[in-house]
Image 1 (cartoon, helix red, strand yellow):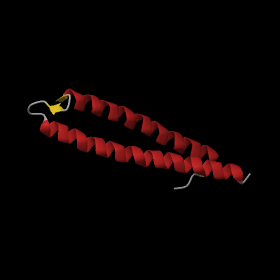
Image 2 (cartoon, rainbow, N blue to C red):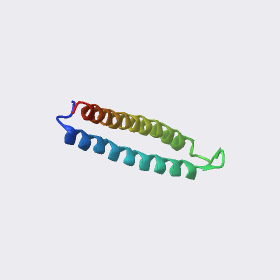
Image 3 (spheres, rainbow, N blue to C red):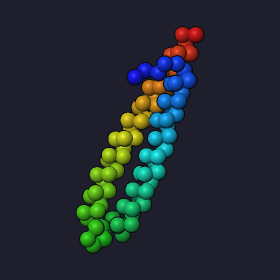
Length: 86
């Protein structure tokens, strides 16, 4: 749904930016947990399944982050267009 005015667009853009920050934190945690399951390039014994789960989770997190980043950019664009019409 398009924003009703500039303030609404800024609020929506900020909400998406906050979501991106959360996704970054989750990705950082995922990386840390992945590193705990490996020794260099070698997967520690019995951790292959968990490592696969973390890779799938990372993909989902990146897809979610991309959604919020694109939405934030769309609201930024709307605000720029709105400035140009005044």
